Amino acid sequence: MDKAAGSLGTAGRVCNKISRGTDGCEVMCCGRGYDTTRIKRITKCECKFKWCCSVECKDCEEAVDIHTCKAPKRAEWLDQT
Image (cartoon, rainbow, N blue to C red; front, side, top):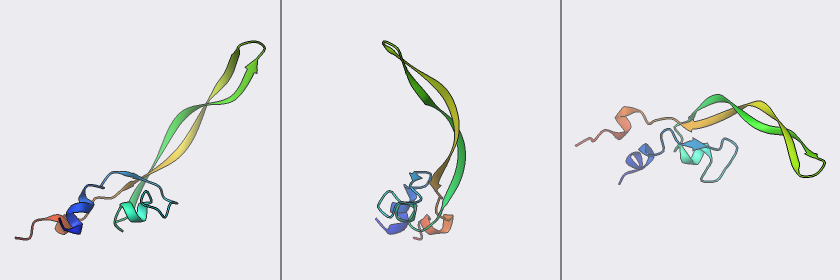
């Protein structure tokens, strides 16, 4: 299997922009770069323990950037035979 065929499988995979390891965008995306998408998600926040037996939390919305590997250019992975 050549390098181009192996890198095809990482297109669209989520990578870690700040990591230098195998989960990092530079390594996982094989130098092709990545796209950034900002999503909103709801998380529990400002949780407070209520007197006996319960915890009350607020729902907070936060914006998070998701990084995904770009697909290789078509010419890189076409069968040249």
